[in-house]
Structures are given as C-alpha cells and as structure tokens.
Length: 291
Image 1 (tube, rainbow, N blue to C red):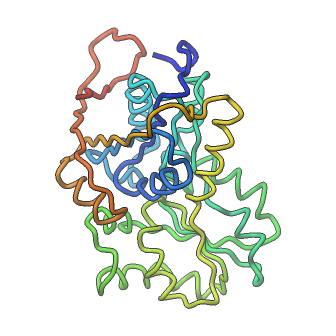
Image 2 (cartoon, rainbow, N blue to C red; image 1 turned 60 degrees about the vertical axis):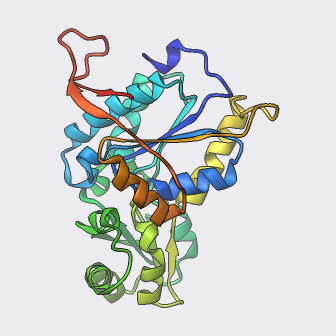
Image 3 (cartoon, rainbow, N blue to C red; image 1 turned 60 degrees about the horizontal axis):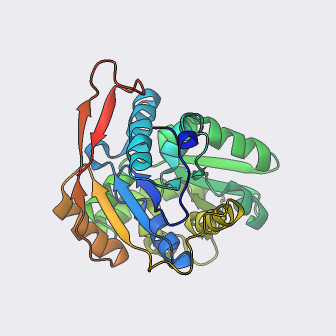
C-alpha cells in the first residue's frame, strides 16, 4: 500500500517509529503538544540499535515499518530516529508520496546560533554521521563553525537497559564528552532520540555554561504545522486521542521501559518479522505481521 493511493483521514493516528524506546522522547513531546491526536508508536526492538547496522539493512527495516504503519491507516509518519532519518527518509517519501513523513536531523542550525566559542559538538551514531541528511544539514548551516563529531557507540544500549544514571552511565558519558570539552565546545547537539533520556546527567557532567540541545520539541511543532497545512488536524468534535504501542521485542519489557522513561502505563502488542512471500506486492524482502 502506498500513501498516494489512499485518502488520508484527519481522525486517523500519527505513526511514530524507532528502533527501540529512544523515540519515546519524541512521542512524549507529540503527546504534550498535540494532545488531541491519536498516536501509534512502533518500536523495532528486534533490531535495536539501528546505528550499528548497515545502510541497506536500515532502509529495508524502515520501508517495511512504513508499510505496516500505512496498513494501520496512519495519516502521517514521524521517523523518531536520527539514524533512520539519515538513511531512509528519502526512500520512505518516495515509496509513500502522498503521506506526510517527518524525520529528525541533528539540531545543528540552532546550535550554530547559540555558540559563542565557534565550536559545536554533535553526539550521534556512525550511521547518522554517514547519512546524506546530516551532511546536508552541516553544509547548509555550519560552514562558519567547527563541528566536533562524537560517535557514541553503546549509549543507546544503555538507555534501552534503563541505565540512565549511576557509575556505568557516567563513565560512558565522560568518555564521549571528554574529546568535545577538550575541543572547547560550548553547545552540544543530541543526535539520537535515545540521548535525551540522559540529558540531565550530561548537563550535570558538563556544567551550566554549556547548552545541550534536544530536537524533539521542534519536531512536535513541525508536525503541528504540517497537519494544519494539509487539513489533517484531528477534528475537535472527535473523541480524545488514543495511544497504541507496538514492539517487535518483548511487550512486557517495553511496557516497563515506557513507564520508567515517560511515565505512561501501556499494554503494548507484539509484532514479528517474517520474509515476504515470493512475488508479494511491494517487492520488500521483509514484512511485519501485525496483531
């Protein structure tokens, strides 16, 4: 099913996806800023984290997730993952041309506006740094400043496990922060949706003089503008928005993480991956079976 083949329903949900629980930092902002909207969150925890995977794998997963969300009638999709946005946003938009699809790009532009030292740090995964979206963003907005790129392998895994503070988390963060501080950064961009869940620990380690930027609030504002421009805002006469959660991992573990990270009680449903049948419409090698 392609987005251009269906009539979008303003009462339909907004689909949100990430490789795991990191995208809940975006879900939290959408739920706060667009309380009337129904939200359908999909966590591909069978493949978390995306940041350590190849570009071809990530694109394959994202296109299949897009098919699943369109199959659920979503009127828009938010790619709540910097890695997935970096490598799969354009393929998703080509596959579903009639559907509003929003991605995340590291908040380099506001960081450039804030910096006084002229040195900006970006914390992200290898795949994000390799993506065209990130390179284009830096090329547009950061030619007059120095950008220190800090690969943070393993940090998303810590968040998935719920290690948001304490000696292990601090040791990992200090290892990533040290090169940026040595380079005299005064503004740090969080280039992965998992990282805002350790933002308070980061701020404590770097001190109050450094700005640490979370892009999630801006994504929520952007979605609100897009829905208004497309006449897709949920009608005020409709019942209150609902929230559903899907995971390709363990639903009970996801539910515990959601309660811990964003304070929401949920009963997520399990999905499973399987190879697509030969000759199946769409030509994707994998598909998600929905409950």
